[in-house]
Length: 299
Image (cartoon, rainbow, N blue to C red):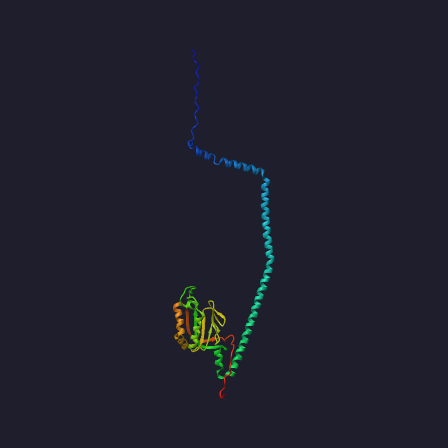
């Protein structure tokens, strides 16, 4: 029995399994193509230019090398010039130091000569006073400041307030100065006059001997004694009976005024009795007028 030929059974091809990330197409694209197409094209063009632009890269390297060589040359030349100039500068410095030392030595010698001449003048003045002044010659020399003085007395230190104020107003402003804690020339005038009245025989301020012709003035905020500026603190030395001089000065009107300056403006003061004070002679004593004293028995 002939039957119809049977066809072999058709086998269906199994489909490929579905990717787990098939539903995440955006993430898949990002992972598979991490480099943007535009960047990829630019990288390719750059690679092509690098392959064909060898001479240009070489020229750039040569230019950089030439610049470095030029900079090194400039530094080397500068260092060489500095090394050459160093001995010259050192020599000029040594010459300048020698000139300064020589001028300083000359000034010291001149100062010694001035001291010797001053001592000679003082001795001659003392001899003349003893010859013509009799027993009062030494007293006259003392009061005129022509000789050095040594003896007991009082040391008075006057200084500006610790925190002197530049501005402000007050009773001291009426005489042309602001109401501050600075010591003024008129303050020192009162101090000196008070010491004279209390019995001082000789006075000096910052080693500047005062005479009958001395002047205490102001130049701005500076105090001048015989046109020489003084710097605070002002140390006033007064030769005399120390304890008596101190008591009389502090009880005087001028001493009370100094105390008021301390209380009201913070000016610092300190007074002490000294057993041994040394006052220099006045730099120069100019005699403007002189009249001989009539001796005893003359009509």
